[in-house]
Amino acid sequence: MSDLRTPLSKVRGLGSAKDGTGHFWLQRVSALANVFLISFFVIFIITMQGADYASFVEAVKNPFTSIMLLAVVLVSCFHMKLGMQVIIEDYIHSEFTKVLAIIGNIFFSSFVALAAVVAIIKISLGA
Amino acid sequence: MANTKLRANRPLSPHLQVYRMIITMAMSIIQRITGAGLYFGSVLVVFWLVAAAAGPESYDFAMDLFGSLIGRFILFCYTWALVHHMLGGLRHFIWDCGYGLSKQAGTWLAKATIIGSVSLTVILWIIGYAVA
Image (cartoon, rainbow over all chains, first blue to last red; front, side, top):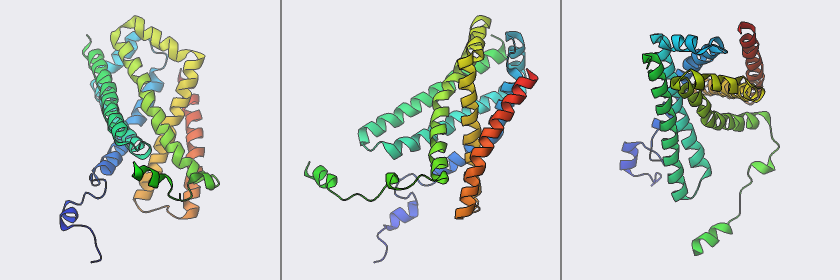
């Protein structure tokens, strides 16, 4: 027998991390999206620097801008959740601490995304 | 716990500390460090957006903070981390497509990443000050 892998594990194709290539693929897709989104974000910041409150609100109220800002926040937070998970898995070897850190990572990334989304929607709807 | 002791006595294979640091190694770890920096730096973006959502006073407060000398310095570092992480990511896309994997190409890409990220950051800030 030259191959120790079970037929079931071959069919599942999830490898030793039991997670397949899903994480890798999503990391790359969100990275590609971020190339465009972060470019937009940097240009937006440059045009918005030193802007007073009224002109900032005016800019965010533009539907294109608010949609893009929401995309920036959501894709970035998703990407950073994936990235931090890899860092945690690489450096934390105690199973309990690792699971806690991975949960904390999800909480942090979700909270950052949620806070930013609420802020953008609130500004764009003019509340 | 006998298992733990056995593990502790195992001979270790040479790791990072025995190798001379070369530019591709440096770019590899910097990609991770900038990523972690941007992770925690996302709090700054949220602070800015929430301050704006809360009203004109808090927006002005946030803008004053970001406009201060320390604020600008942090934002400059943030810009560099962002640009560097993006260029590093593009480098990974090149590798994913199967190109640039030779020793020479890897070193060239590593140099291009750091030179590109520093120059692009400076250019972005020059543009920023020019349009202000």
